[in-house]
Length: 491
Image (tube, rainbow, N blue to C red; front, side, top):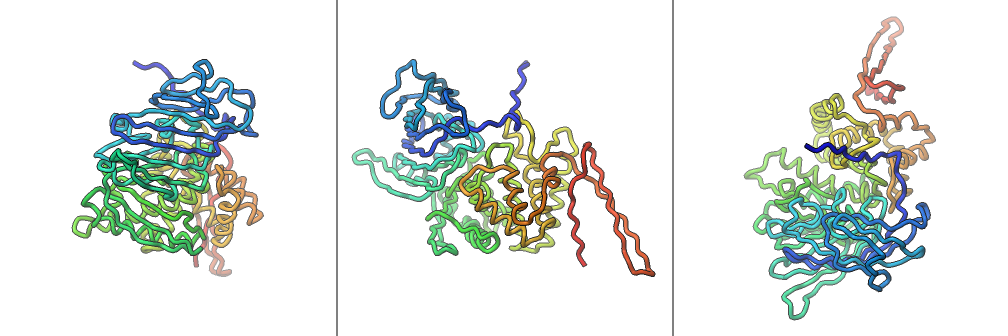
């Protein structure tokens, strides 16, 4: 019997990384059992961090093949390496480049985290901390870098090679039967948004022109023979792109947008920058076998992952305690999209039913937690209905509280102030406080307190004065000051 207690990670203990990574150049040479990864990391001290400390990189089940500092192999006593991490004892105090060569076995990676191979397709899943299964890294969301990735594989095994960002170069490796592609993502991102795919895949595609006049090649890749069932997903991507421009002023920012749907993907879907990955049950549909509910689910999930391009990717979360900042906000955005695509009233009824069926019991049970928890032992346990659905309702309440026009102005301010950064809930609320001049300190309690408040409403009508008086009384199981509950009166 295990008697060890999981280590608690606490929000109050957050400390900025002592080092930053500005640039990541990856060379990934795919092979079923012996994939070699060479990572060149451009590092520097973080002005907000500590000085004179070792560089400690995360790892998970890695084999170190080589290590160089500014192009010179490191002596064995200069570092300590294990499958679980790499420590550089005395890193330079100025900018430096670290080149790390690692080896992994994608076929044996049954965790389906990091780089894995299943059903003949190479895939990645790096949220929350899977990138450390690819190379040693500062695997935390507040370390953001610009990535260039070269992917190489046997052409017969993996004729399609995809990465984050824009395609830069592709070709054959002479005399080997192998080929390569190079991808560059100009937008800084954390490691959890890294992705690559290699395999035999069919493609359906359509061009989209953004409101800024940028031509975007949009494509959905699926396993061979499944392309006829991917048309609706492709259409949902195009509609999502147009809606985000019209509703939030958010234009897509790369030359390509790729969706890959495979049958073996352990997350439902993932918003990797420019390369969204899906379990194909959330992408494939045909009129002969799919219900209206299936089509609605595909539309919603496709939209959700696309909307992360801004609420999650361009503006990411500083730490995993801020998970609601990307997930709750993006659920709200996908709910609004679906409401505009279908009946708003009917869609809202479905949202509330889902909230009462999934989140209310969670909020009333032994595992209840705040939308932004104060501590966790395992981050994957907090991908919950509270973070997603209650998080979305808090955003909806904020819009009700300040009004639709001020909410849009606040969203514009939030994206402008935090583009390219790792933000917090405080940063999010500060944008709305700035555009409205309102103090949202009391509203912020929604992120800190678990439980579902009960609101009792009384109504008294005076016929003589023709005046109706409404009374509201709030009760919450947890002790503390009341929560701000905006009430909209609709004539």
